[in-house]
Each structure stands twice: as C-alpha cells, then as structure tokens.
Amino acid sequence: MKKIKSIHQLKEEKKRLKHRQAELESRIRGNWTELKSMMKPAGLAKDLYCSMMDGKAAEKTCESNVVGSTINFFFSSLAKKITEKAGEKLNSLFGKKDKH
Image (cartoon, rainbow, N blue to C red):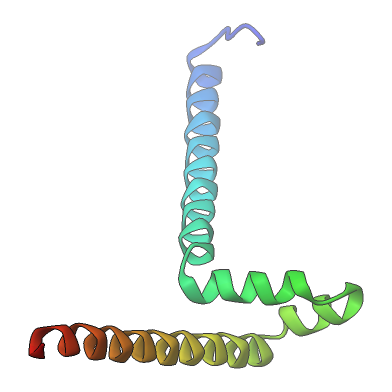
C-alpha cells in the first residue's frame, strides 16, 4: 500500500475503495441470484439433462434460451404428472385401508 501524503490523495483513495466495494457487492448479488436460479427444480432438471448429453450438442442445446425453456417446461410437466400419480396411488392405498 502506498503512503497517502495529502487530503486529496486520501479522498481519491476513499473514492476508489467505495467504487471497489460497490463492484464487489454487485458481483456478490449476481452470484447469489445465479445460485438461487441454479437451485430451482427447473434449473436442476436442466443441468441434469445437459450433463447427460455429449459435448458440443450439450453446449448448443443448453445455451439456447428457447430450447432451455422447452426443456424446463418438459421436466416441470413430467415432475407434476409423477407427483400427481404418486398422490393418486397413496390416496387409493390409504383409502382402501380405511374401508376395511
């Protein structure tokens, strides 16, 4: 760290540090937003799909917003149908036990 010899240099250093702080806080917010996005079920399904594909096809498919949205919609719909079926099965199992 260089020595500060005048009030002007002190003010410039404070300005530089505040600018650096704002930049770092912005990066943290961006990283946090990206992390939250990645942890959503649709994001996890997309990552799983992309990891199952090979090489350049995965890059091309997974970087496309339209295709990515379609993939997210497909996996979301699939998950919804699976949970509905599981709910129906559980209701029928527990419903039969109550009647006996």
